[in-house]
Each structure stands twice: as structure tokens, then as C-alpha cells.
Amino acid sequence: MKHLTALVVCIALCISACGSLPSPLSQPTAAPANGGGGGPDPVPRPPSPVTAVPSPSDSASIREEKLGAAPVIYLAGRTDIAIPAPDAPSDLPLFSCNTVNLVQETYPVGYRIAPGTSFTFNASGRINFYGGSPDEGFPPDGAPDGSLASIEALGGISGYNGPAGALVGVFLDDAVPDGVAPPALDFTPDGTGINFARLTPQIGQVFFIGDGRTDKGETQTFVAPDRATRLFIGLADGAFFVGPPSCYEDNAGSFTYEMRSDQPVTPLP
Image (tube, rainbow, N blue to C red; front, side, top):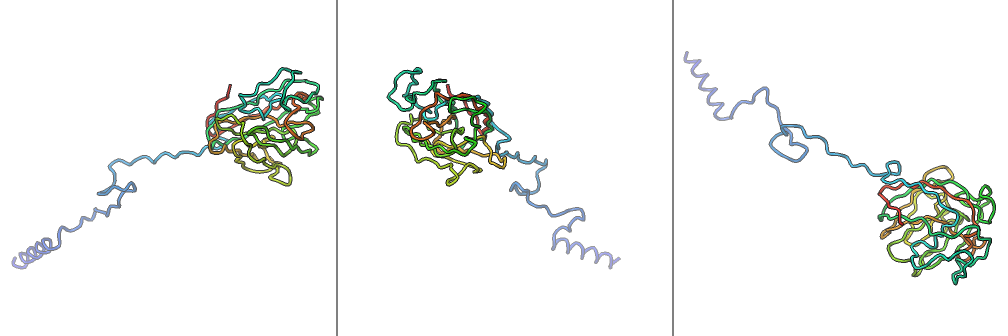
């Protein structure tokens, strides 16, 4: 009995000195991943939603347009220039080509956009720039024989150096582009060429779009620069594709394009 009493006293003293003995069922607890302390959340939290980065395949906007034979890219944003009636005299070389007057010049197709928006295109069709049948015309990539254009600037819109008769575009801000034009980009084989993957032109720089794909069939991306609020799509034409913009009225045919963007766009009136 004395031995049992001594054993009980010894156990009591050990518990008093060392604290409670650990339960065989208790386990260490890690701090939760959300930074809280004192044990895990009583109810598991759902994972945070993942925000997908927009891509051309997840477009915020898809536009399909049929472009006529004479949309003048150099009239983009030019609310200060009125298109004269066919055969009417004009002080601008743009309207003074004196050709067969098959069609009336038009303003290019325009869109309200946001800076940084990415665009892709898929274009088709044919336009004859010499008054002949559209079936004998140029595709959106330009002259099949490799002929090049060297069109001069007009107002604040740059010149164009690249495949003759190609589908082109220009980004603008909200100002009328009647100031000094930025330098022209070079889409000839000796310059950037037409097989680039991604392009971010300056405000007012005319850029090659073509059919929207490289020679290997890869989709090309065009990015609106800082301050860009408008995008225009049209053609860069001239007398034999050299000199000041002109001679749109002898064109025949059309281009059709699908434009995809990663942010919403609104057609301009």
C-alpha cells in the first residue's frame, strides 16, 4: 500500500511539473494558407477564381465587313475634307486622277477602340486597281507579282511602302490628322516585310494587314498604341501606286474581312 501511495504521488508531481500529457489523438496544426492563425478554417474555402487573359480565340468583339473598291485610308478621321461628286474639280490630288470614274471614293471603315486592344484579321476577296474585272484583281495581300507601292503621306497620316493594293489600316486618336505625319513603315522585303507575328504602329502610321496571316498561315496580331481611340481600315492607292494618294475611282471589286479583338469595339458612323 505504501508503495502504491508513493507511485501516485510521483505521477502527480510529474504532471504538475511538466504540464498535461499529450493526447495520443492530438496532432500539430499548420497555419492556413490564407495567412490566418490559430488553426484551420472551420469550413474549407473555395479556390480563388482565375481570370483568363483574352486571346483572339476568346474575342470580346467579332466584326465582319465587306469593304468596297475605293475606301481611302488617307481620309481616316478627316472630317474637314468632303468627297466631291464624280468629275467635280478638286484642289486635292487625291480627287484629281482623271481616270474612268468607275466608282466614287469613300471614307474608310472606322471603329471606336481602346488603347492596347489586340486585333486579328481574316480577309479575302479581290480588287482590280486598273479598271478591269475583279476576277483579275489583287487579293488582300496585294499584287500577286510582288509589285510594291510607295505612297506619300497626306496630312497627319503616313505614307505607305509595301505590297501594292493590299488591305491596310491606321490607328488614330480623337484629333483630326491634319498635322505632321509620322515616318512611314516599311513592309517591303528589305524592311519589316509582311510575315511579322505582332505589330504595334504609331498613331497615324499606315500599316499592312493583308489577309491577316503569314505565308505559313500563322495569325498576325495588331496592337493599338497608347492614346489610340479609333481604327480605320481601307486602301492605299495612287497613280501606278507611286506618289500622292489618288486614282481610287478606277477600282473594281471588294474585300471581305473578319476582325476579332480582345476588347469591345464600336463601329463609327
